[in-house]
Image (cartoon, rainbow, N blue to C red; front, top):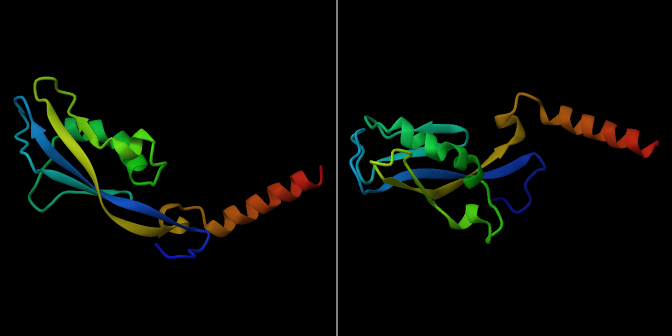
Length: 130
């Protein structure tokens, strides 16, 4: 990360969700090593690959938090595994941080950063006059 980023810049981890083990019977034809990638706000698969929707839905709620740096003792920093919700499948996935990227507010929001800064300043000015 840049030493002195501009105030509208932030960092996210790129992630790989990797099938680490299948301890039951997977009816979605998943294999150890299958993976899906998260870069910014987008999910992608290697060319020609697929990934079980049910396994993916189990990890999706975790991904935005895993993209961000947390406190070292927070479980989001230390725990990397999730399971498919199918109890007969027992597919275990690992969420790996595979890189970092810098984004600006305007890369990910339709509301311009300058507009937010002006609104924030106006709110502070209003509270200062009370």
